[in-house]
Length: 217
Image (cartoon, helix red, strand yellow):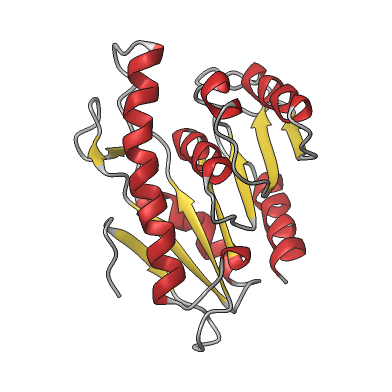
């Protein structure tokens, strides 16, 4: 089964038609195989789920072997937003393809990711008119709070997680996102990991899994 983005796909362990799907977006300079390691762990406990881990649509500006959802180097805030909107269209197309090819409704779809993958998942998930079930975000931020506030179309379940020692995407961005959701009458879950840098700790993997199980099963 092929998609518009190159993807690493982990089919359900049950070998039956998937009952739901999790789409995981990698960070800046990574690829679908990177984030599929998280999917491999979750898959053991979610045997009826298909995991779709796309490569972002662009080659990474600073890591030619990896990919980026949008360019972050020498860009103004406005340029970053404009480029993220292009990536958002491509992620939305992928979500629609996953739904169609697997005969799934939006309430059976969870998206999420790490770092830049979290950023594009938040923007895409909240703006989608065809609501998805949930967003699982690690070490990310809202790309542009003003833009997102003006373009909210749905209210998926959201969990955000972040390390308190993150020097790549500082934890203040989690606090900013929490305030954004509070102002816009969302109830979200969040967790800050102590002594954790820019990564997904074991506790984060477990919390993400429990969140998915709670909302999909």
